[in-house]
Image 1 (cartoon, rainbow, N blue to C red):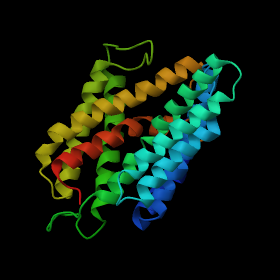
Image 2: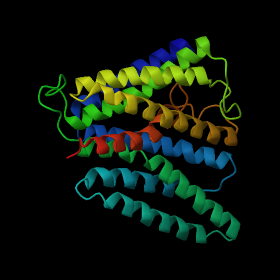
Image 3: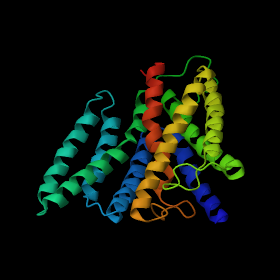
Image 4: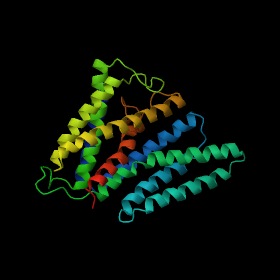
Length: 279
């Protein structure tokens, strides 16, 4: 299993790094591809959990919100407008079901899945709207501000996940929310927060920001990343499956890989927004 996971990582990591280096439009297209795969799995889980839905329509709504955020970055009202239209279209599609209960269920589940995956639009929003790094920042001139802030957000999530896993495995004793994820412990969460805060401090410093901002960013990303992981666990538990899919050998599905990032993306965006790092 470990060998399979390592091989999968060796294939996937270069793809992400190349997209980061190339920037627009490759990075946005990668996010759209990830969202499409995650949406396919999310609607599949909803169906297995007994929730009727319109997977193709829901996926289109989610991708439209993400693409709209990218293509109309100078008009921030476009993406919410597309989501609103999607909710209406999902309702109209639900009218076609002869059973009103089934129609309502389909409308709610389709809208939920679309909005859930559509939260990845905040990654695009960070890329498109983050301002340049301050002069003299160690990473200034290497990548633009949008990509640097994206790296900060994603590394914070990954460091929390890794720290929580390693500390929880070694020192974990106090379980919490066992009905969703019996392996999670409070000690693991505390370790994950500590590691994420340290990594956030380092990346903020490299971006020319005050590293003490990590005292807010680290715990913020950690809490929402854990919530994102538990949210997907709840969905998988309801569906009666261990993984969202088998797309990535040794790692499960795409949704398993981005569940924490889905919730962390808007949190990171609002942190940077309050910081005033957007154009």
